[in-house]
Amino acid sequence: ASTYYARMARITDGELTLADLAAFLGWTVKTARVMQHRANQRRAQGQSRPGDLPPPDRRYGRTPVWSLATITEWQARRPGQGSGGGPKPRT
Image (cartoon, rainbow, N blue to C red; front, side, top):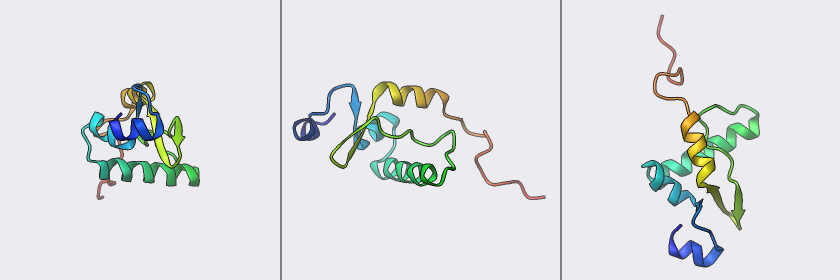
């Protein structure tokens, strides 16, 4: 976790903020925010998808935090390219 957040919220080494998550997965922070927003919307509608970002393990105020174990497990079972998530073929 970054020094700033660690001081402010006491985030431990095994926890990832959204910025840490983005860096860990090779995404931009904007991509991570969009992924979290879409996953939250689908969960609220009862339409979760296998590739959705998991809900945070905890929150420090408004800051969502995931454990490293949660993210590595999610990444291992996340569907890959070509698993049917794209547009439907034209007929």
